[in-house]
Amino acid sequence: MYKKFSSFEELVYDFKTRDGIALRYADENNNICDISYAKLADMIILEMHHIKAEDSSVEIVLDEQSPETIVNIFAHVMAGCDIIVSGPLVPEDFTAQAAEAAQAAKNFRQARRDSRGRVIGARGEGELLFFTSGTTSRSKIVRLTSRSLCTCAWSGQTMLPCGEDDVILCILPISHVFGFVCSMLWGLAYGATIALGRGTRHIIDDAAFFKPTILPAVPSLISAMVVLDALNPELKVALIGAAPCTDQVTDALKAKGIKVYIGYGLTETSSGVAITQDADEPDALYPCPDADIRIEEDGEVTVATPCMMEGYIGDEPMFDEDRFFTGDLGWLDEKGRLHLKGRKKDVLVLPDGTKIFCPEYEEDLVRRSGLPDLGVTAKNGRAVLIAGSCSDSPEVSGDLKNKLLATVAEFNKTRPLGQQIIDVIVRAEALPRTATGKLKRYELQEQMQAAKN
Image 1 (cartoon, rainbow, N blue to C red):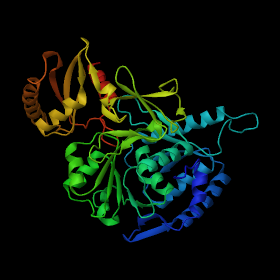
Image 2: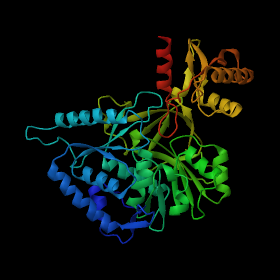
Image 3: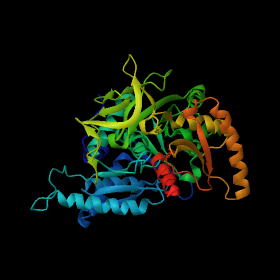
Image 4: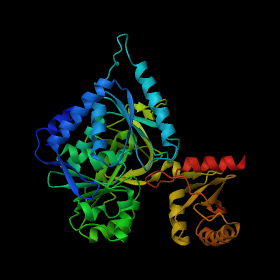
């Protein structure tokens, strides 16, 4: 049975008992360097004492894909300091959001102090503040603890074990909880070596450089690596999450002898709550230990799990009787495996009650047009197609719109009258998306509403 760590402190002191390599990275001359678990523990504990002396309450830690980043994260939390992890792939306005979040967290902490200045109910360690992806509503600030994150790492280990013979390539941003847990914390908790990527410039060739056995990735990244033949022969497992993955990608990975695991989770649940177990059916997801998954009457997936967040800062969570309403649609088969169908709020409900599942439309239209940056939303109660990342030349954009209108006309022949797209909007700027490529549908609709006004 794998050990379930209850805090970062317990985990880091366990590092001191190990002989293996914790972190692998490239120096400025592109030489590979290693840091042992015992050395990493010493670095974290020393930094923790420095932070305690500074009496910090909330800090923004920059994710630079470096050992210093990992040390800072563990040390700040162990010192009782709340942290927000920032990185190169966070939204453009992240700095302003992070500053506001830091102040909100500080105010929240102050409100929980007793007359002696102690934090009421605190476990001694700080919280980790993650921004939700904002795919269907404004980003919220999620309060996670080292306990919930360590519990999630343990859950993942029981479903997909890693160990001291494994090298996990960390090229996902750890400012997002999927990257934080699956690219970093899970491996460190159970003795694997974490190879820290060399940045966005090397994101495709880092697999050949570090030779990982396990690669956590989002679908768009793993797809590009398959197309460019950038996967190393030592790779045994691909752990894919954050967005739906096509059968073509999973089939291509399996053809290379790579086991494919699909993970499902949310920021609010500290990452994964279900994962592949049957290699021939990667989309059939088994619930992780102690994760209670239920399908509500309208098809929405709800979850109760020990990995649940403490709550949002400045907002109420979507709880009902200790269950979190995920906003995802799905169904459970006779084996209790979860099958996902998309986002509940990806369903466009028109005034006459007609429902359109937008990702299905977008996938078909991307295939027909060859244009990747497409989004479906509502205008005056009807569905419209928006094409982003187009030319700002009126002549070029006009020609593109005419071609898209012809594509939409063919597409509409496959849909009932009430579910057809009535217009095409072409714009030079890219559609709003998260760091993992998901369309921020709520923000897109807001932009449409602002344009009308």
